[in-house]
Length: 264
Image (cartoon, rainbow, N blue to C red):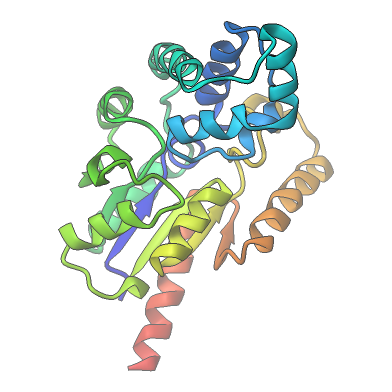
């Protein structure tokens, strides 16, 4: 039987479209004279933010911009400066981007009813998560365990360390009894590295990159095209299950439980 579900946060359970980190990254880099596109930011979304900034600074276009602006490549001190600016911006934006996505409470209540433990992993820091966790709790969503890379010696995604830490805390030995749910490819890679079942969420995901309003303004055919684009990306990294909405997770759990019952 499935014993635990591990959710991501932004783009999965809160912040439809994972907008807050994108806005914060853009501002932090613009403050040092670097322009970023959404696709450049979202390419490694889900990683610990320090690691993510390192990835961005290593992009060819960003290095070219930096050379043009400063006459040299960015240093570790530059990375620290950007990281501090990013933290300051994100903490500000998180207060406005922690609304629960549709179906989260219904799914959460189902999991509680059937005794399935709920935990989370994230690319956010503990300080950031205190804001997100508090607002989510006020709206009825309160996972039993909230883990960041700071809890596992800064081993962020795609390392399996956070999931392994959760399994240890929950006394779960078999990774096949655990599901990791996320909206980025890094989420899926984290799940694969831990040996757990992986579920990718399509609507409101960072991979789709649209706000709720932007998605709702599309006609049915355009929405289908967007869903299929995201599904193909998840399929390319061998995601075990792909769902449109978080409440579709219930069907996945029931399917897996039935399959386990037949196996034994």
